[in-house]
Image (tube, rainbow, N blue to C red; front, side):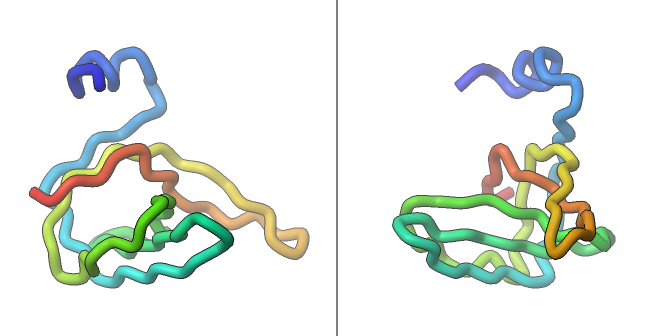
Length: 90
């Protein structure tokens, strides 16, 4: 993968946050994917990403996250969330 600085300059909508504390982490399986939702301390919107394998719980951990804002339409209403591009333990 590109260096983080180059990756962020090539994609102006991406945000890189470091040392973010995870308040809650939920995983659920949908077909062959595991959908992950994390709540980050100080944010009111969920951060979502998917993986092929189940992952250990990140609750209480500090992470570095690269993400961008997105919207999801559920039952005719738009909900904002953060689409995670990369997440690593700090």
